Image 1 (cartoon, helix red, strand yellow):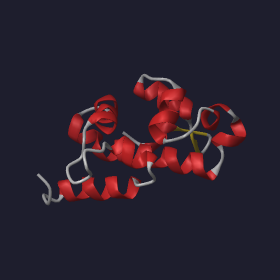
Image 2 (cartoon, one colour):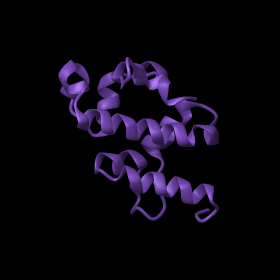
Image 3 (cartoon, one colour):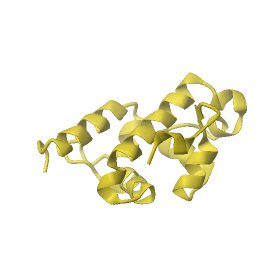
Length: 116
């Protein structure tokens, strides 16, 4: 799928995430490491931090979706699968800690055959 499935009027939209991933905006906020206000107040949705975190989640899910066959299965992986080499942390936990680049690098390494 395209990153645009998560966007509305040129911004990443918590509502679009929730619709696509069959969850709530509050759940999206939690999995991105954001507070509830970040996905409910228009000024907070537009903030750099909120948009960055939503973009990171979208990039990760979009990158692994072909491997799992659906955005919903990719989201389940993002939330629950411990990543080797990261002390049992999931992609979600790493993103919440500000380490989305580490997750993207890990996915690229797996795709390149470096990690099994």
